[in-house]
Length: 119
Image 1 (cartoon, one colour):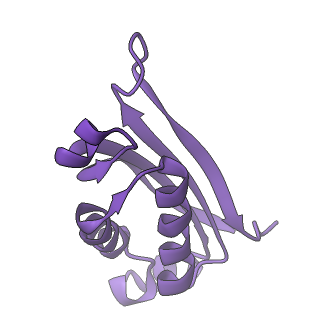
Image 2: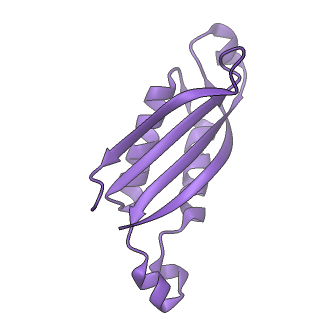
Image 3: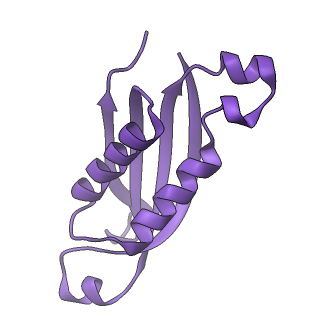
């Protein structure tokens, strides 16, 4: 199985548990890896045969900009569900970064994998 990825997709959203966080938008960053078979697209050279990272990014931006989760864990779980359900991939790995959340750290966040990773 092959991997299509999106690295450092930055999106503004409401995220956090503190009152001040509920009143502002913060930037989160995503790294998404999606298992797929690229052989048909490689052979045809036709976007219709490919997993479109542009379509995935557009859908995630739309969803995340409108969301208001308290926990990065809940947001990460929903992002993976969208990718698995709407883009028919068998496996997704997500790293969700919340920069600036902890003083002295460049970023904090979660890494999760959902689905069945093909061999």
